[in-house]
Amino acid sequence: MTCSRRTFILGTATTFAGAFLAACGQAPSDEVAKTEVPVGSAVILDRFIIAQPTEGTFVAYSAVCPHQGNKITVVNGDTVRCTKHGSVFSIADGSVVSGPSDKPMAAATLEDNGATLAATAQG
Image 1: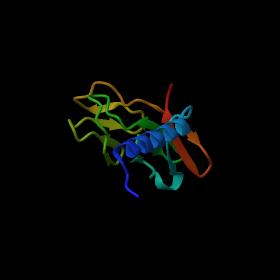
Image 2 (image 1 turned 120 degrees about the vertical axis):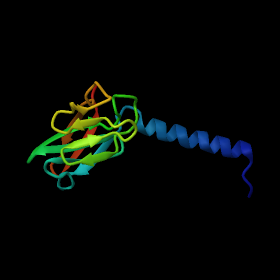
Image 3 (image 1 turned 135 degrees about the horizontal axis):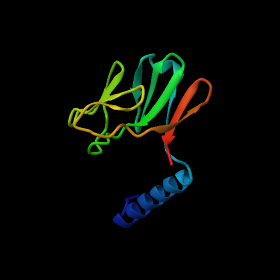
């Protein structure tokens, strides 16, 4: 059986609609085991950064750099850095350590599920 252009487009649209409806009403989240978040450091997931500035204290931020919307991609101890323009942020409170960003990282909602942590966008 061959796949016509019309069948392909219809199948693609149906798949997209199903995925959209399945996700409707739920904010996307990133989840990680607590044991994977180092004390005094952080992990960068798909959309969020989850950090443990002090033992047993967990915080979450958006992984989108507030400077120009690029992804923050590097963890260096107790800071994270956006490699696009070099902004560095503290994992303790999301504040700017060095710019060009003049805005802190956006805080995210963090849900503690016992052995795992799930971050979602605030608001």
